[in-house]
Every structure is written in C-alpha cells, then in structure tokens.
Image 1 (cartoon, helix red, strand yellow):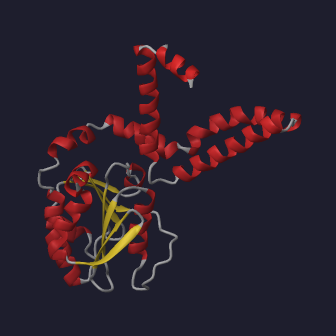
Image 2 (cartoon, helix red, strand yellow):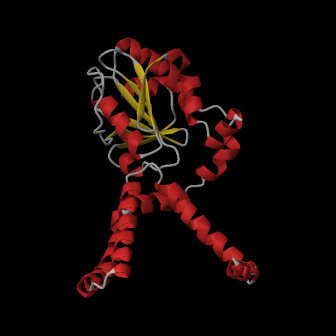
Image 3 (tube, one colour):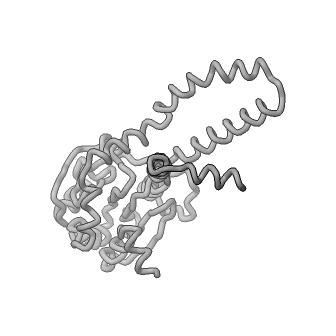
Length: 264
C-alpha cells in the first residue's frame, strides 16, 4: 500500500496525460469493434496470450518458448489483416465530419424517415419486398461497395421505384448514410440464427445478419405478408405499424446519450 502511494506521489502532469491518452486509445478501439465479429477474435487472442504467459511462467518449456518467439512477429504482422474491416472503418470515421456535427443536428427531422413512412405503407399494401438499412456508428462501406452507388435525396417515389419488382435494384438492400440513400442492391451478410417463423425469408435473414455484425437498424417489408419488421442488435421485431414507423425509427436511431437522459 505504501509503495502505491509512493508511486502516485511521483506522478506529474505529463504522466497523467500519458495515461489518459493510452486510456482514450484503448477505449476508442473497444468502442470501434463493439458489436462486430472482431470482439470474438480479440477474446481468443487474449485467452491465447494468457495461456502462453501462464505456461511460460509455471513450467520451463524451451521448445515451446522458441516456437512462440518465432511465431509472435508473424502474428503481429497478421493483426492488420485480421482486423482490416475495423481499421478501415476507423479511418473512414476519422475522414468523415458528419459524425462530429451530428450531435448538434440530432433534433432536426430526418428526411429519410419522413420519406420512408408513406413508402413502406404503400409497399406493404402492394406486397413488394423491401430492405432498408440505416448506418449508425459502425461503418457499412464494405456493404455499400457491393451495390449501386446512388447518393440520392430520399423521397417516397424513389423508394417505390427501387423496390418495384420490375426494376434491377429491387433485389438487395438500400443503405442510408447521413440522411441520403448511399446505395441500392447491396448484399448483406445472412444470419445463421434460426428464424422461428418460416414466413421470414432471405430479407429477414439479411436484416438480422447486418444487425448482428454492426449497430445498424434495418427495416424489412415482407413480400409474402406485407408486414413491416425492424432488426436491431441481433433481434428482429415483427408486425410494426407502418403508420407509426417514423416514431419507431426515431426511437431506434436516437443517440444513446439522448436516450439515457430520457430514461433518467
């Protein structure tokens, strides 16, 4: 205890700043990979490192230590490849100013939601399938690259045109970024989770899949039943009322800080 107080008494402002910067970097990295498959990879690497340290400290294993010493540089070189999507997402977020000014614009009406509400109502009545994915903190550029670039201003007519069965863009997802339709006909990762209802097809599995690997919110209109569902955080909520879709989506897309204030 005395040694701890002695060490703390020797800290100066530079040491405190150094500790705060390292903490901020680690915290930002954890926030970046939160909700992605990199979390499982990181857990595996940490578990492997702990096993290696314990074995090396308890038992003398010359051959094992030699193998670890030779493999460690290769593993360090492999880390950028393993975490390539997360590293690219970090650089994308640093290069985009939209995330930094979004806090000041959070109370403004979202034109995408305003356009999507009547579009979903008509798509549901016509039994035209649709999948709309809202990008949030986790970047979806790798999925945007699989589709047709739009960067279009949202409107009900545009949604209805994209998801018309006779168009080339209807078979895929529309990704929304910064209140614009970034791309259409995008390929989403399919969830491997079992769906309880057989009426939920590939669109529902794709919506669930993107919500499992990111913090995105996905809206699905079923081609079979016309029902509207919302997928978020690895769960799918069915039978949403299209006339209340704006209220529901604003609640899901609300920044976490605002949501916490309302709950308190």
